Length: 463
Image 1 (cartoon, rainbow, N blue to C red):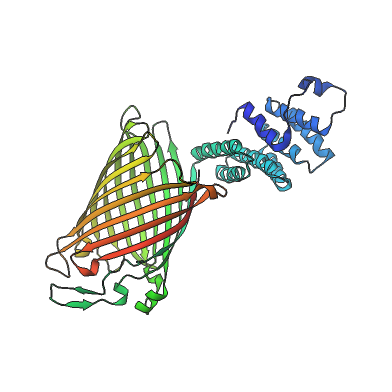
Image 2 (cartoon, helix red, strand yellow):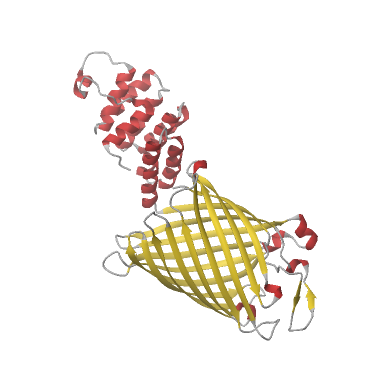
C-alpha cells in the first residue's frame, strides 16, 4: 500500500489535516521562533510525513497531543509517522485511539486507512482488509472510496489467506427434489401407484451457510499453489402445506453438509500467458440428514486459451471416486467440459459451456450418462443500480437400467436462473443479491418428474 504523494496529501486533507500551501518552507517553520497555531502545526506535521520526514511529523504530532490528547487529526498523523518509522505496535494502537475519537466520516476514513496500512505492514493482512472495508464505508466521496477499494484489492492479492463467508435463505417449491405427480406407473404395469407424501415435491425454505478459506502455499511469476478448505451446510423448514402432505417428515431430514480440502495449482502451459491452466485435487466428506453419507476424491485439469483480452476458450476433464458411508453404493465417474467466454464490445460477458459425465455404479440410479449445455450472460452496465446476469441450462441423463422400468430411465431437464446484485445498497463492501430459479425435469418414469421454483436471498462482496 504505497499511495503517491499527491494522493497521500489528499488522504490527509480529507482527514482534516489541511495540507494547503504554506508561505514558509518546512525548514523555516521548524527552525523559526514564531509560535505556531495548532492548525499550522498540523500542516507542518502532515507535510513532513508526506515529504518523507516521518520523524519530524511524529515530533510535531506528539507536541499537539501534549496540548490536547484527544486531537484526532494529530493522532492520525502520529499513527502514520510511527508506521513509517517502523513502530508498528504504536502505530496500530494510535490509529485505534483515533478511530475511537473520530467525530465524523472523514476522520473515520483517515483513521481506518492508517490502521489498515499499519496492519498490512505488520503482516496482519486479513485484519487490514477489514479496516479497508471500514474506510470504503466512511469515504467522503467516490474518489476516496476508490482509493480504499484499490488498496483492498492490493492487500487481497498479497494476502496468503483469503476467507469468504456465505449465507442465503431460499424459499423453494421443491426442497426435496420430489415428484411433481401424485401417482406414477412403476415396473411397466398398466396402472398407477399412489406416491407417498415424502416422495412428492415438498415446499419450504432452504437455509444455506458456508465458509471457504484459502492459504497460498507458494506463488511465483508463473504459478500459484493454494490449499482451499470449504465447509457448507444446508437445512430446511417445511411449509404448512408440505407438513400436511408429509406429516411425519421433518425438513432437517434433507439437511446436507460437506467438508472438503483442495490443492489447486494455477499456471501456464507455454512460455507466454496465452495458455493458463488449472490443476485441482480435492478430497471431501458429506453428511445427509446429519448422518455420514459418502466421501470422495476428485482430480481435475482445465486448459484455457486466451483469444482476446477478457475472452478465452477452455477444455477440461475430471475423475471422481465416491465411497459410500451409508446405504448408498460406490460411484466411479469421469467428466469432460469445453466452452468459451467472450467479452463483448459493450463489456457484457457471454459464456457457453458443454459438460459430459459418465457415472458408473452397481446402483442403477447412480449409473448413467449425462450431457449438459449451459449459457450465461452477464450485463456489464447496472440496470437501475442492479447488476444482472442470467443463465439457461438444458441436460439429458440416460440410465440404461432402472428398478422401475425395463426400458431404463431417460430424464430431460431445463433450468433457468437470474441474479440481481443491488449495488446501491452496499454496506461495508457487501451488497444484497436476489436469485430466481426455475427447474423442470421430464422423465419416462413419473416418480422422477419434477419441477420447482426458488428465490434465494443472499449477500456478496462488492469488491
